[in-house]
Length: 118
Length: 111
Picture 1 (cartoon, helix red, strand yellow):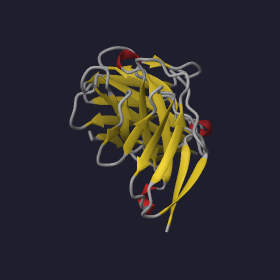
Picture 2 (picture 1 turned 60 degrees about the vertical axis):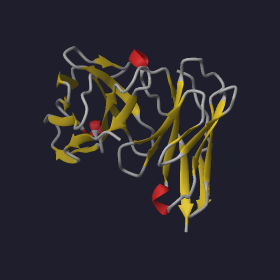
Picture 3 (picture 1 turned 120 degrees about the vertical axis):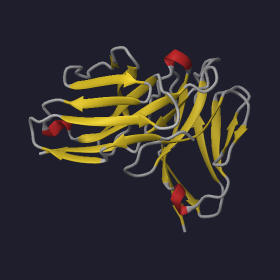
């Protein structure tokens, strides 16, 4: 299957600082990328949908000014957690949609980024 | 997107087939069934998907009932590395292609 690279895999930061997470599709062009968050022992929750060249669409309850998403190219989307606080500590996972053929799109996921805010 | 129902956990002996069921009784005609799995502390891995016909790839087989209200993911020869949470997801594809993850099934493969 297609490969999605996510970096960094683990980050520890101080409260109040900002953290940027990168998501790259390595062998296909992704017009749409997605950002998820997963708290311990819970399932993945979609945070936002990122379309290349346009503003991201955020799910209800997700603060767009806190979680800045940029999708400037067909292979790169970034998530910036601004002014991070301990409650933002979580596992952040990106995915990229491989257009494939017609409606049979498949999302491929990155390995995830574990964020710990002290 | 239609909701899915999966058992919270299942056990399987190494080398035996693992059959993971999923109910999706409210699935609509243009919605696909996708299966992903998540090994602990990793991102989900795509396994297989289908619309109405049975599908097979190098990882697994997907059996969809004729009325499309349920499906079964089959891992033909489970190994210890197949221990993971398996998610059955129904999605419409295209511009409405959002994946809504439920709680999935924790498959434990025992030696």
